[in-house]
Image 1 (tube, rainbow, N blue to C red):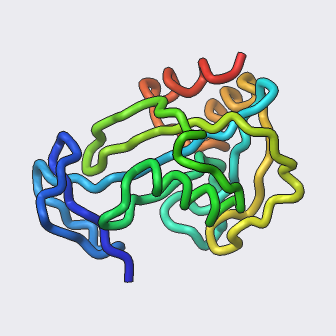
Image 2 (tube, rainbow, N blue to C red):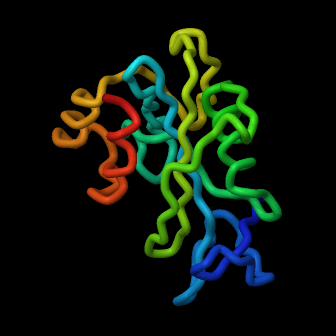
Length: 164
């Protein structure tokens, strides 16, 4: 069973925890979420979610997930990279790209500049169906066509500048 810290709008823990899957937060309560954008040679490494993974089954999306109780966001980002894509990264290799307060979550978006062979990654089958490298224009087209999850205009204003 996985627990998440409930934090205030500023990311400060309230002392309360919530069990994964029982997201019933009150106004002013949030949980922490991380995304990691891997990029190299003017391309993004994106992942297609498993058809069994809720929410967003079968959608192309960013790598990420929820911060476990007691974990820092950057440690969660490293863990998610390792679990989902078998990419090992140290916290100092990640750069914070954005910090956004959403409806019931606080999202920290990180980037990792690293060259990996997409075909050699050991994917977490329960979460990730496949991965591929895409250019900025390919990603934009996937969003437009509804193939890639649309996290919103503000979100992508932080992401697109990562690659030319």
